[in-house]
Length: 437
Image (cartoon, rainbow, N blue to C red):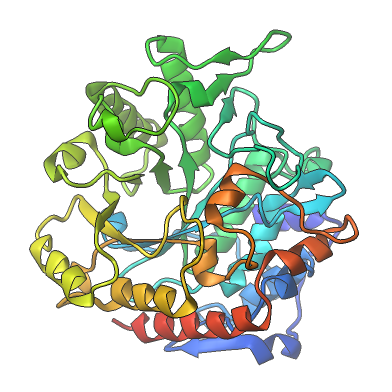
């Protein structure tokens, strides 16, 4: 049984499907690719997982309707160097999880429900979803808290499985946490997307859980800790992820530490080279993309480290400037600096027009599509948030915006409403123009 069918069975659903014409009113078509646009996320998040999968079956690129989810799903094929020109879209899968009172759970199911509204990859390059949370966070995993009480995603636990914010543990006896990730990745790949996840490397932001003992702080000088870090990431790669976004990667080996804002020691340069090499080797995947936060400027340094792309170097607002850099770096095929629409530190305030302008620049500023620079976006760049929150706030805290303690109210209040719907349609038009390049 494939992982998607196993998920459906675990949820008490039939594995068989029949077409539903009601899906058609939100379908956006560009070339032979389709997704849902002109939506607000709550319209999808309030549905069940089977309805989300049905939508993916109805809009799939082959245009064949499958009455049962296909058994053999492969990652979209863009070669081993796909990450060099990809669009990376980080989805805060904790913020869209189900909020029941002060409980936060099932973020992976919410992310599956949102997949039909993510623009699929283009002819020449991949779109890659980056999940903000995989591992348990150390400040209150499985809970939402008041808006200004810390519950940061930048502090993680290893050696204790996966986050209660994300995994559906109520069905874990029927489909394991790793199998839930397998199902998510199969669905994302079926929709034409690559996938990855965010990780942290600042030692004091990582705890190691030890059964029946107090958690210990991670230590890069401890060989066992290093091995655990490698193996935890290899396990995830083996579920279908092909990208790891590395927080604070610029400062690996003590580089530019005057601008370091993390907490605790970082791995040495040659140590991180070894770690990335081992993740590639032990996972058996030659297609992996390692993206380093702010790891740009000294391009040779980051290329030799084993990174694929870096963020935050190229000014995103000037189309001609982005194009000049795309031309300048066209022969760097293993690594390239990238362009941000926004990043995880975004504190809001940017107008819709400004965001659309940046998306236009990252999708079209080059001479030839093969020269495109990698780009980086956040959930808010596709689905605008409510006016009084922002990307960084939702990384640092985990508030519920529910009026009645139930998930639907949280989803309705988390995102912008009709203005967000209109913006989402404009984003779709930009991605639609890029699809056949």
